[in-house]
Length: 348
Ligand SMILES: NC(=O)c1ccc[n+]([C@@H]2O[C@H](COP(=O)([O-])OP(=O)(O)OC[C@H]3O[C@@H](n4cnc5c(N)ncnc54)[C@H](OP(=O)(O)O)[C@@H]3O)[C@@H](O)[C@H]2O)c1
Image (cartoon, rainbow, N blue to C red; front, side):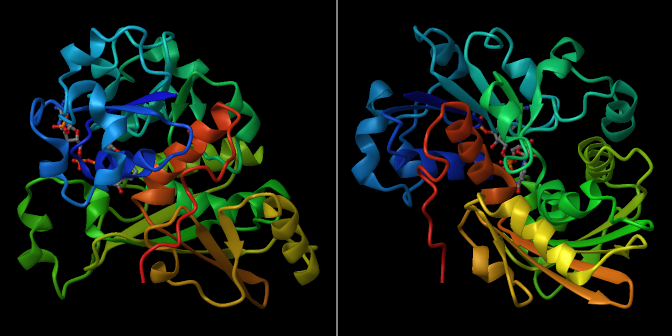
C-alpha cells in the first residue's frame, strides 16, 4: 500500500512517518511538506530508522511539495493530513473521494455547524463532507470506520476522556454533571513558536487553561459523548492543564453514578466493551503516563467512593491521541491486523 503524510514535519506528521516506516503493509510513503520540500528526510529527522529508506525512495528520500504529490498517479491509497485546523480541508482539495483520507485536524470532527462555529469561530470549511466523515474513535466506531473514505481522527483530550466515560454513559450510569480534569504534555500544542511554549515558560511550571466550557475540545467531548451514548442530556465540564512534560496525557473524570448501579456491573461493562480491544488496558492500579509513553495504548482505572466514581485514564497524546490512532484507523479501514505497525513497547 502507498501512504502519504501531509504536514510531515510537525509533531504528529513526524510520528506518522516513523510508524508507517515500520508498517508491514506499507511499501511506499510520500512525505509531503510545504516548509521542507526538496530537503532530505533523514537529515531533518535523524531519529528516523535508515533501514526504512526504501519506502521513501520514490522521491529520493526527500520531502515533496503538495504540487509534486498531486502529480503522482495513481494517488496514494491513504492520505494522512497532519495540518492545523482549517488548513486541512483547504489543502486536501481535489483528493476527497479519490483516496481514503484520515484527517488529524478538527475540520471534520463536528458535523453540527452551530457547534463547530462556536468552537472554531467560523463555519465548517467543507459542510458538504461532514455527514460522510466518520469520527475515528477506533474502539467505539470500528464498523463505521471500516466503511469510511473520510475519517476524522479525534482530538487527544476527547480520546483520553471518552474511552473510559462512554461505556458507562451508554449504560445510563451517569447520574450527574461530568467533571473532567486533564493534564497534557506540551507537544499537545504542536510545534508552534510561542512564548508560552518555550522551555523557560513551561519548565517547573503547571497551570490550568481554558476551564469549564471554554476549550475547543469541550465542544467535541460534549457533542460526541451525547451522540455516541444515545443520551442528549449529559452535561460536562472540562478543565485542561499543561504540565512540564513533552508528551503524555492523564485525565480524571468524576460523576455520581445513577441509581441502581453495582460494582460488579461496572467491571462487567468495561470488560465486555474492551475485551477485543488490543489497545485498551483495564488497570488495577492508577495508571501513569510513563506506562503508555510511545505506545498506542490507553490505560483505564476506576475508583468508587459512595455513589461517586472517578475514572482515570492515560494516553500518549502523539500516539493514541493522534498518529497511533490514525494508523489504527487505517488498519481497520483496510481490513488489516489492528495491531499492524503498532506493536510498541514504548519508552522506559
Ligand atoms: N499534537 C498533538 O498532540 C495532537 C493530538 C491530536 C490532534 N492533533 C492535531 O493534528 C494536527 C497537527 O498537529 P501537530 O501537533 O502535528 O502540529 P504542528 O507540530 O504544529 O505541525 C503542523 C504542520 O502542518 C504544516 N503547516 C503548518 N501551517 C500550515 C499551513 N498554514 N498550511 C499548510 N500546512 C501547514 C507544517 O508542516 P510542513 O511544513 O511539513 O507542511 C507544520 O509542521 C493539528 O490539527 C492538531 O490539532 C495534534
